[in-house]
Length: 456
Image 1: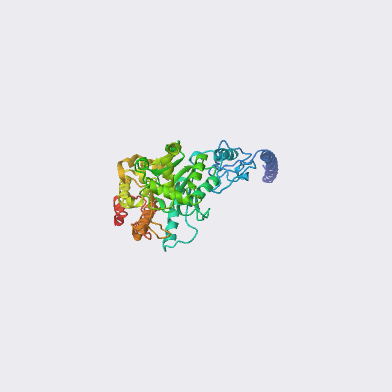
Image 2 (image 1 turned 120 degrees about the vertical axis):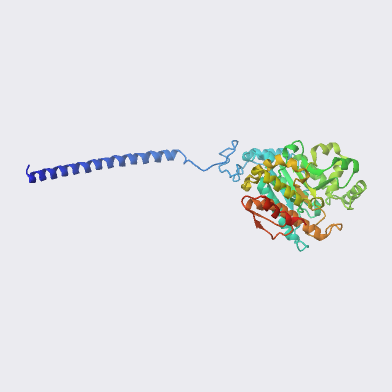
């Protein structure tokens, strides 16, 4: 074949193939472009009629009404919706005043919860911890610092166990001072938190020294109040110290509203305030103060009206619902060592974990705590008689003993929190000491390092 002809034919075929290739490519491009356009149109119409899926986790309660509860918080309750339906908050006859009784509180709470259904789940275990101090700065030079740390301790406990906390530093009634100041606060807290089943009053000078322990609420299901006390001391000894009213748990219900009203009317708002002091002093021979006080008043009600109150008030004595500090500050060192020994033996107990799941590890520990006997951590240590703010402590205590005892108890409790963050106070009597703990803590060497310095 002529090379020139061959070249011509090859060129012609190449051009033909080239035109064919670009023609097919163009057709393919048009096809895919049309298909893409159609897909976009279909997607647009589908998106218009169908909400965009949310792949983030949501927490909703099955009883929640999406119409009334458009936004859910991360805790399964709707914090951004308050329906217009009237509740007790819209009743002009209602009053926060301690001097004005409340009627049908159970019905009013129930009605509020009906309009806020997302709060229903978990309502039976919902607690608001209430505490407080005086309106003015402390006279004791270290008082304000101690009160700050005592409050931090309560915040730490509530953060772990999911309690709300309210700190009040005002007198909500001008006559209700000192130990009587808590009653207007407790009543106001019941009003402010209809979603909570329990209001937990804890004196400012009381602190949690077992940060893992959780209240056994199931035990109190048939009671409306819990307080540390001993029936035999009330009914046989008629002792002023048969219970302690500085820490109590009260159900948010009509019975409690009535109790608070009756209890408060033995205080400074009563015209018979002086008379009540004389009655209490004559009944309780070991009572120290001539004036009527909240503790004597509650014991009086239990003694005189047993049928009305005894079955509703749980006198807790199986654990330190509140414990007398003089009896407890000496046990912290041995308790710490016993817990470390327990953890050295059980890998599950010493495993590092997030603070939010601390309750699970507390449940693990309960299996082994029976072996520790008296060395179980006291739940609440109460520094009665120390008066950290005024400094006017009970004369049978040395002031320095009170303050050192508080520091030791606070650091003992703080170590249980700090450990989640990788640190510990190496000396319970020196708050400035802090040591990083190894990731495999505790082991025998570290156990000695963090316990020997505390034995003073």
